[in-house]
Structures are given as structure tokens and as C-alpha cells.
Length: 319
Image (cartoon, rainbow, N blue to C red; front, side, top):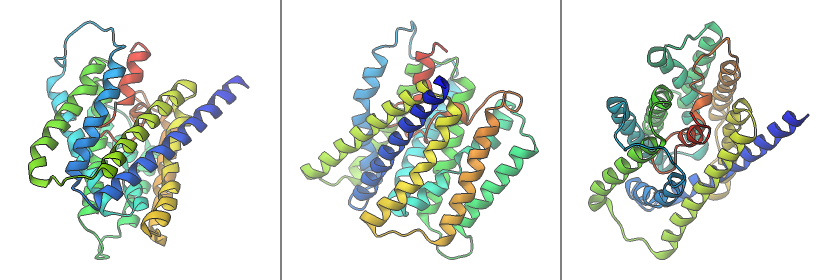
């Protein structure tokens, strides 16, 4: 009974967190119609530093900031920069629900990438689930329909690069300090966006700067709620809650952007979500997965603008 209550609390915390994340993404989409995604990402990363500083103040691990796996760390850092830029582009160019549907392919890609990078064995059941999920992506994209554009490409790149970053964190996360895992992508994103800023910068009125502050606050609150959720209950309960974002995306898209998902987006999303949940449930079985790359990924694609939750939890759990 106690475990059931704990898991229910974890699920509710996660649902609240992903509602805040979806609201956070609404702000990205709104500002993306007025400013370059590079400019929005620059300020997002800048406003993310205070939370990372607070989190790292409690890190009593002795050592320096030199990575123990420099090449893997460098690759992950590049992937995080690509993920953040691509995801922001996708949110500004595509309907919210369609963007989420494509990004939800990330667990499928993580499962595939875990085979060569982690030595994970994927049996026929998870293999079929991946194939079905990728078919769902094709349903959403509908190649040949003539409607594909830069936004779809950006979402696909974000899903792939985010999956690579997640698998790498699973490969080296136990060896690297959380400070390295948290700071390197943020600093790289900050520098990369700062280099682009002179080319894209537009002055922002105080109300839009305020929206950036709201976006940062939403991200901080959502991150804190997800951490609480993973502490309160099992990862297999928390992880599927991210799919609730598609409901918020549909609601917010209708209310604020006059977006209405078409039938094929809805069908493809359902297929992707069903396959993703199946993979999460299968991965929770000890006899099925030794590495749990999807479950240990914790939450969302890494963008380098918010703390890496998996790294933070690993530090607090003593791993």
C-alpha cells in the first residue's frame, strides 16, 4: 500500500512537471515568432546558470573539472548543443503537438543506439516495438505529402542527437563528476550562441525579457518536480508521464496558436507513445535490460539550458 501511494505521488508530481515543461515550450514558440531561436536559447542558457550553481554548491566531491572520458564528453557536448538548437527551431516552426510527436521517437532511437554503444541486447519484442514506433514517426511525417520542411528536419535531428547524448550519459555517467556533466554542455551552448548573437540579435522589450524569466522559472520548477518524482517512486512509473505533454500541446496549440492536430498526427502520436511505453515497461525487467538506457535517461532531451536530472540524481544517490 505504501509503495502504491508513493508511486501515485510520483506520477502526480511528474504530471505537474510535464505540464510546466509544456507551458515552458509555449513561451519558446511565442518568442520564436519574434526572435531567432539562437537568441532565445542564449538567454535560456544564461538564466539556467543560477540553478546549476545552486545545485553544484552541494557537491562535495573532490576533484577537478577535467573529464575522465574527454572524447565521449566532447561528443556529448556537441550533441547537446545540436539538440538545443534543433529543438528550439522545431518549436518555433512546427505545431506543438507535431513537434512532441517527433521528439517522442527519442526512446526508440536510444534503444537502437544502446546496442552498439552499451552492448545492450534487444530482443524481438523490443525490436518490434522500435519498428512500430518508427512507423508511427513516418505516419506523422507522411513522406511524399509535400508538407515536410526545415521544422520537421530540426525535430528529427533533435530526437537523434538527444538520443546520442542520453546513451553517452549512460555510458560514462558513473565515472564522470556531475559538475562536468552539468557544466560542459551549458558553457558550450553559451559560447556557441554568443558567437551567433551579433548576427541575429534583436532588442527585446521588458515584457519579452520578463517572458524569458517566466520560461526560466517554469523550467526550474519543472526540473525540481521531476527530481522529486524520481525520488518518490519508480522510474518506470515516472518516465511514461512525459507523454502527457501531447495533451497539453494540443490544448495550448488550440488556445494560443490556432493549431489543430490532423488525423495522421494523432494516429502517429498514438503509435509512437504506445511503443515508447512498451519499451519502458520491458526495460524495467531485470532479465530484459542490463543498462536501462531509456529509464536512466530520466527526462526530456538535453538542451544545455537546464540541469541534467540524471546526473544530479546520480550524485545525490551516491553513484
